[in-house]
Length: 97
Image (tube, rainbow, N blue to C red; front, side):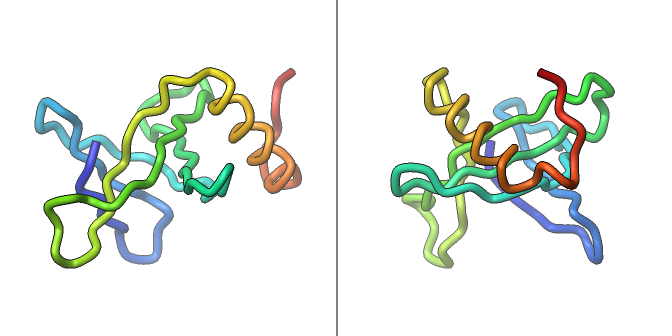
């Protein structure tokens, strides 16, 4: 996914998926883990409460420092980033164990 766009006065991010469809997410947090930056997003059209974790990478084609958001396949990295997110945002969200 790429093409991040913050809407005015909102924590809403619109990403364009690989099919060219715009998908809205609520930005929850930015987490650094092992020298990489990740974003924790909550889909606005999904009521199950599951977050999406994407790695932030520089776009190789961008001249204006645009970011690319890449899915994370490593379950250990996903869990570590989610655990850090829970530590940082524990007061703002209710987490199920």
